[in-house]
Image (tube, rainbow, N blue to C red; front, side, top):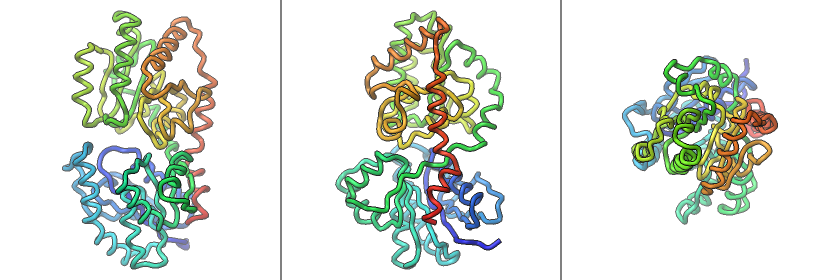
Length: 384
C-alpha cells in the first residue's frame, strides 16, 4: 500500500482529560479512511496504554513517567508546559528523522509551529481543545504564533468567533467536531456493573455527572441543588428514591466531600475516575452538567449517544451552542432555583409515571452523530 503522507500527533497532557480520547479517535479515523502513516508523540506517557495494531501507526516515546506526576491543579499545568519545552529538541530530532508532512497539535500547539523555521513545507494543524480565555499575554501569544498555523480547528462556532475576535480575522479557522462517538462506547456500556454499584443504582431516579473535580465543572452548584432538593422532598423520600453518581478525580475532592458530610447527602456518591464510565451512564436515568464552560462537552455528547436524557447549564461554548430545550433540560448557569425546579418536575412526573423525554433523547441522539469518526475525517480530509 502506498503511503500518502506522514502525520505527527502532538498533544502533551497530564490527567484523564477528554483530549486523550479525541486524539486517539482522530488517529483511528485517519488510519481507517486513508493511506496516511500516523505517528503519535508520547511526551509524558499519556498514550502509553494506547495501542493501534495498524502497520501505518507508530508511537514515539520521549518521557514515560506520567504516573509519578500530579494529574490536576496548577502544578500539573506548569509541568505540562515545562516538559513540552524540554521535549522540543526531541520533536525537532524526530521531525528530521521521520520527515512528517503534517503535525496535528492539540495542546501546547505553538511549540510545533517553531518547526516551520527549519521545515518550510511542514504543515501545522492546531486543534483547540477547550474554551480559550484570553488575557494580554495569551492574546499576544495567539496572535504571534497561532496565526502561523496552516489550519486552526475549533469544536464550536462560538469558539471560532472568539478566536477571530481576539487574534484577528484569520481566515484558516474551521469548525470540525471531535470524533468522540464510536462503537467502543456502545460495547463498554453493556458491561455489567459491580454488584455494590448496582445497589447504588437501584433507585427510582439515578442522576450522574462525569468530569474532573475542578472549578470548571462547578460541582458545588450541583451539590447545593441536591441539598435543596433533599429539603424540598423530605429526607426519607430523597434517600429512598434518588441517587447521584459523580465520576472523576481532582483538586476539589476534599472540599466537595466536606460539603457532603456537612449536608448529610448520603446518597451522593463519588466514584473516582473510571476507565469505563459508559456502563455507569447506561445505568443512570439522567446526565447532569453544571459546568462553567465546556468546549464542546464530550460527556454530554456521549450521554446523548447512549440515549441518556440531559440536564445542562447554558455555559459557553458547547452547551450554549449545541443544547436547547428540544434536546435537553437547559438552565441558566448559576441559577440554582431553575435547576432545582427542573429536578422537582422530573421527580414529580416520574412519580406520576407521566414523564416523557423521548423527543429530547431523539434530538440529542441526532446531534451526537456529528461527533463520529466518519464526520471528522470527511471534514478534515481536504486539509491533509
